[in-house]
Amino acid sequence: AAGVIQSPRHLIKEKRETATLKCYPIPRHDTVYWYQQGPGQDPQFLISFYEKMQSDKGSIPDRFSAQQFSDYHSELNMSSLELGDSALYFCASSSDRIGTEAFFGQGTRLTVV
Amino acid sequence: QQQVKQSPQSLIVQKGGISIINCAYENTAFDYFPWYQQFPGKGPALLIAIRPDVSEKKEGRFTISFNKSAKQFSLHIMDSQPGDSATYFCAASRSIAAGNKLTFGGGTRVLVKP
Image: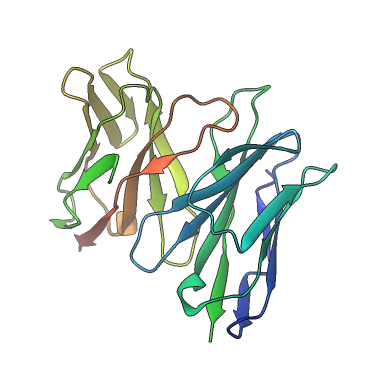
């Protein structure tokens, strides 16, 4: 069965650079969530989209933005990167129409040096 | 403020033993309580989930017990195996419906010794 696809899997950026993380949800899933997981930490909710509209917002820095496109894939844009942004970034998707739980992708490991 | 508190932080259990992880929540609006298993460098994978209208749910070696009045729920892993060694997260959300974010507990690192 198709899963949530995230790219890239690993990313190394320098401070003050920008990064773009991509998420391709499970086919026919209409909702995408972004989570940030620091080392040894639990995943922290950043933002979610339902049917291409922002549905909820968590502790997402103003330097970050995200959107969901017409094909339901989502991108998380991160600017003015800081060392503290180094983390695993997970995307999850679910379907409100079918009522499924959230399935997580394998994550993107971002390292800011 | 941790809305979902999880304990213990780590757990060592012998092969064949029972692993027990406990969680407590504050928000009475939560009505969906999943457990996720995460291996290093991998995404969380849903193990089992429960709604407040049932007190217990069992799937294979995994059992969730739910106490609505105490706002507590727990995961029991029976006959623990070395392959169960992972980090386990409890979580809660308002519902399974779209856009309802998961609030995670702090995680429990489980090590099953052969």
